[in-house]
Length: 160
Length: 81
Image (cartoon, rainbow over all chains, first blue to last red):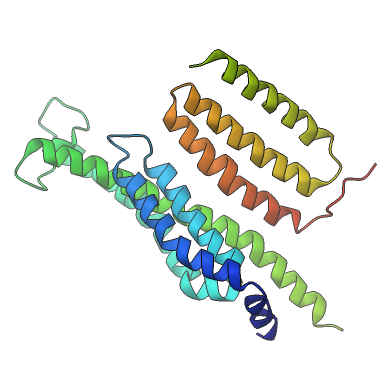
């Protein structure tokens, strides 16, 4: 604990600036995900940008604080939630438009009363699913890379 | 698409790639790869492929650099030989 306090006190500038930057990075990631259908970007890019905000948080504030904000159980749940959302929209669409001679037209999902809006909402749901999974997986990879390192250091320090 | 800018950027990319594989300091190599990715993203955008450039900037210059530095903490910094 004292080690982390020392690191935090040493990096006042990076802590302040990243605390200021992280909400804007996440807002930009959400913008990229939502506007993926009509402009550059999409679920994958938005997910990577969202995950990079967590990577920034971990680099600046340390593993203990980041693990408290983004616990591993929730991370694992989010990984599969995105895939289920992604696959669920497609399966629902196939089941609903069973009699129609059109394959994977999201307009048939009855989310609103307008056909075009249903299609746009279906595309957005798919993008959100991709974004959630990519965000969780990239954060988990970085957490694991750092986690093993700190565990090994603890094991080295204990026998002394 | 402006040919002189393209040629200058691509020449810079080739130089950075050659330096990145010859340098002995692995942290410098990671930073050079990050610069390589960023210049590559500029080239994609300049060739009117904004989507690919976006992905290159987010993944190549952002996430991969962080992963490589995290991997570097588990090994030696200087290349042998």
